[in-house]
Image 1: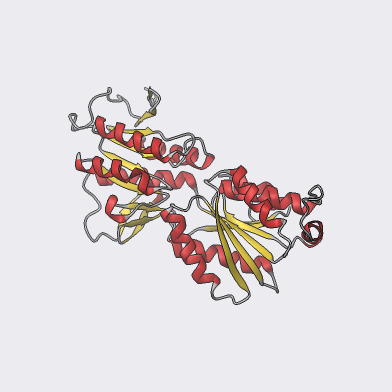
Image 2: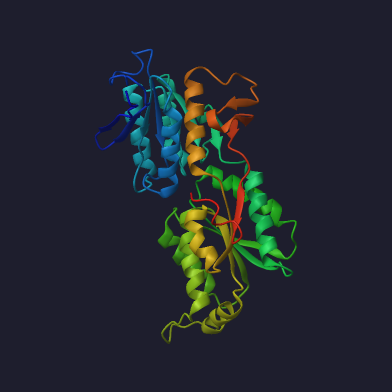
Length: 363
């Protein structure tokens, strides 16, 4: 008999119930009453973003073959933290087993997470962290220091013989615990390069349009000291790339009398010399166009399917009472043993993509 995978849609709040594939999938039942069934809930920062769609597929792959394990994947399509909290509350009422939360605003979801834990649910964080006291484990794509090192090493290399000038970071939100941890490490590594100065951190709410507006405003400032932009998400990089590409390929003119002194001159310099370097956190599929046309030289990323796969495997282990206190590794199926540092499970080292290897991966 061919293997089957059952997908149950459960209303607006529960957009997908993905049941582990097997010869005889178990019928829906209250998860905490049926001891043979485990329900894992995966909450993305924003449902519909390509990164999280790929991660959800990886999580589904992890559940396949796990007898009696079901996966629910749902999240706010607009990235609303309040809606994310409501989804957690819904899952808590259903008494599922494990909730894995990715949120850029931990304060908005903390009450829902605490309530879930009081009900006996396991709560872990994935992709983006929340305060340690509000979850059991964090599944991280890489250590913050490793992400920062990869970004700054690539930035300095791409700047070539003259690594000098102002640097601006475009982040997701000011409330993102994970991005703030990255920024702390980026600052530390930038301090080792006397010619580079971080002058601003701009939030974009993980929105491409807002990122583009922020980058465009930076590019038309009359002082012309901006040398590099570091974008901390695929949406942030895509928006900034549009602004940098436009600045590099044509003049930006502002009708008189609103034109500040030096606007056209500044943009023409960027056009001729491509002096504003853009790098950041983005997958090769989304970054390929920007790298091949020269707007971006390099990006840093990890495999989102592996991220979702690892998160689901960790959630399944947690439901079974693992890993034990003091464990240094966890069995992650096809990924092998993954390192545990304190209360954080690491996917691995981030990978740098540039024109030489951008076509070797498609995620």
